[in-house]
Amino acid sequence: MVGSFVRGLLITACLYALASIALHWLMGVPLFWLTGLLAGLLYGVPYLGMLIVVVLACGLVVGLGAPMPFLFVFDINPWLHALLVFLGIAGLNLFFDWVVMPRLVGRALDLRMHESLLALLIGAKVAGVWGVLLAIPLGALFKRLIRQSRASPFATEPTQSELSSPPEPDPDQPNHSK
Figure 1: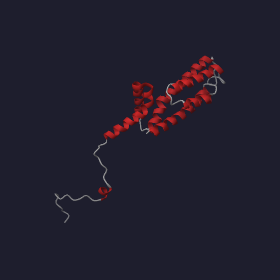
Figure 2: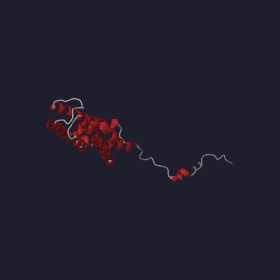
Figure 3: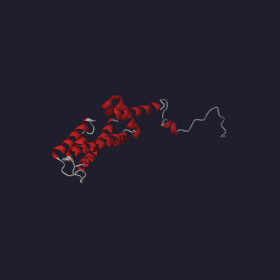
Figure 4: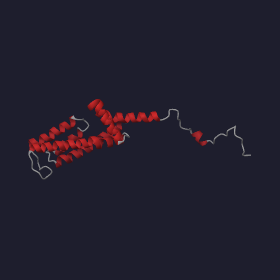
């Protein structure tokens, strides 16, 4: 179960890195490769990872200026450009946190989308940042425990000999085969 969670998180982080590189390139962030790869590496660190990427990307836009116009068309004030970069990064992060990650990681852990989102909401409400970090694995664990508790503890699988041998005749029933 832990391996599935880590695998899902790594796939999500790689997709986030690719999406961040594309977004930073479209938005005219200098060194977009660096900021996009850093965003993918820090995706698993809630809040702090996004904060580092936002400060770096916006600082590069204000400090170095944009190597190309915003969305290839608009030449705008660096501070407004930094604000738009912040909004773009925040929007991408929200999309990945609320749509992509629950689907990918939830599928790896056999959680449906609504179960993943419910786990995230409860985790955030109960334990804040740590709750968000542990919500999906704990949600999968609770789902597995509930499934196992529903199974009857007395139900047993028939053995091979029971499956292959014909049923024994009931002595109380009259035998009419003669």
